[in-house]
Image 1 (cartoon, helix red, strand yellow):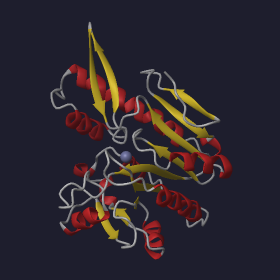
Image 2: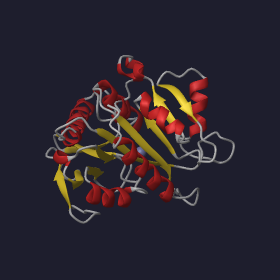
Image 3: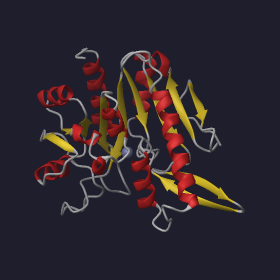
Length: 278
Ligand SMILES: [Zn+2]
């Protein structure tokens, strides 16, 4: 069933599996500066604000929709049997990324089985379906991803959950992990409210304005070990400016919704993309 959250939006149904659709606010083809994309349906703290902003100031906002959960469920039919295969909607953009997401989320499924092969193909088509919208603009624009994460991070010794925190990124950088090249910590912001960017100039501007920010290492475009199929990797492979806005959400009585902080981050992106650095 198609359910739309925002006035004046419309649904684009994925032709290969009709319970998956994109909710589209605004007109991707007439976007001048940025298109927003929210892949994880369970992360919606900033969505209303972005939808309103797009209606007032232009651009577009694309939201993956199926059943309200983080992951997408693919229904793969073989003879009489239908298998549910889960995939992360932010890992749809390269075959390597899709395969590793499917492997992780469906531990019992053999990757070389015909079910898995069909699932990988369908996931790749779903990725193309999203990219077709993101690529509608007639000039180079910025892709802005909207995400929410949970309080702290697992293993922070403070009962944190999940794996996103500016402190965790800093520690990954310190350990020599390859996918990131710089981290700025702005202490008065919550550790979970952070930008993740591909362009050094955005990193420098965000540091100048005292935001938490992570700069992705361009090595992700050439090192197969770093290809996780995410939109940040795909964007950098294709020389598209990418900014991810991460903010905390409440998760089963832990943490809080960083609604105001994420709104300020969205405003900052409008400010940055009005500057024409490129
Ligand atoms: Zn997310």
